[in-house]
Image: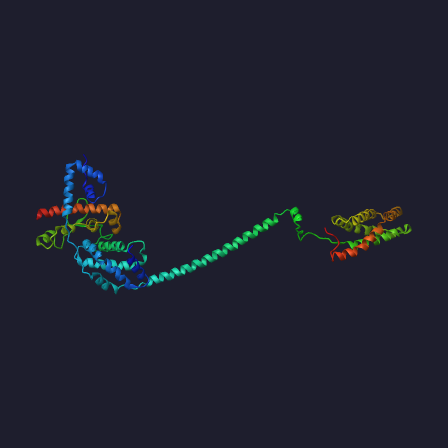
Amino acid sequence: MNMNDHAAIQAVLAGDKEAYAALVVRHSAKLFRVAFRITGNEADAEDVVQDALLRGYRKLDSFAARSDFGTWIYRIAVRCALDKIGGSKGNESVPIAETTDQQQDGMQIADQAAGPERLLLSGEIGAMQEVAMHGLTPTERTAFVLRHLEDCTTEEVATAMGIPPNTAKQSVFRAVQKLRRRLATLKVKT
Amino acid sequence: MIHLSEEEMTAQVYGEGDEAAVKGHLDRCAECSRAYAALRSDLAEMKFIEPPERDAFYGEKVWASLSGSLPAYQARRGNWLRFGQWRGLSYAAACVLLGACTFIGGRIWERKQAQSTAAIKPEQKQQQGVQAPPHEHVVVVVLGDHLDRSERLLVELKHADAGSIEMVSPLSEEARSLLADNRICRLNARHEDDPALATALDHLDHLLQELADQPGGVNAATLARLQKEINADGLLFDVRVLRSRLPSQQAAASGQTKGGTI
């Protein structure tokens, strides 16, 4: 564990609130990066960072000193981001799908926001993959972001999301599968 | 040939699963090899929007917006207080436990000691000089008194007149009374290895026995025989000598009682 982090935590727990500033400054940027990748939204990512650091502060007395604070607060941020995009338990029971997925039960609803095609045509987003990401469930999206973009192992993904490793692996596979199909469709349309 | 599933290929891309087996199959199977190459290409082409860069003061800004809502960690101090209380209680509990163990241990030791003391055999007690239990009946016979009484009886018996035999009858009662004391004194004399006293008391015992064994009273013939024994044995003389010797012994024994116990 980083000794500076450890010293700061001890100071905070001893009543020195200002010592937490060092931890916030040191880890905020990394938390923002993962939060943005999961939420896809700058404002939401900012909220996630603050929420994660706030939760971390409140749970600091239960933090095991032998762990790494960076890893610990990173996991909290992932959970916060997952909550933010509606991936917490209960929100995934009926995933909202844009297309009919044979492998997953879902319901189709009218998308009030700008559709992928519209977004592509407007040229607002250069990368069509971002559009394809909208078709993923929160769990799939988070698992894919952590595995593909954050280079986490399956075990790390599972730990960060609080799910079994096999579920994490399946989520990554389904995300890849969906993205490829979606991208193939979008490529044809363009 | 069984082809690789998309899931197996995806796992292969991320370096998971049975990599050697999958690689071996890809080397042999052109169809799976093409599909795997397409998967790798698709994943490589996925370029997502990079998170916007945060400036160097981002952390400070986050802290500025966060610090107002963070309470100082008083709870931790409370925890330490609680920990201190628990520690105090633990010490108290340990002390109580130690006291209880000491008390119980003492009781057990006491019982064992009592059992081992009770286990000593009476013979061992005698060998070790252990005193008789207090409930044992003790009879102390003072030798001086016994010799005085015996001397008086012998004098009366020696000077008794055969013509007034009724005067002799109470001597049988006195003889029976002296007989028990005489036996105690005899045993004590033997125990203390005093042959002169023991011999005299043996003679006295014999005479007292004969005198006591006259249920119908002492007749003239018996009286004459007993008087003859007294004179022949010099029993009265012996008793007087022993009686005269006794005060000096008592003084030497510094008040020790001469006699015997039952």
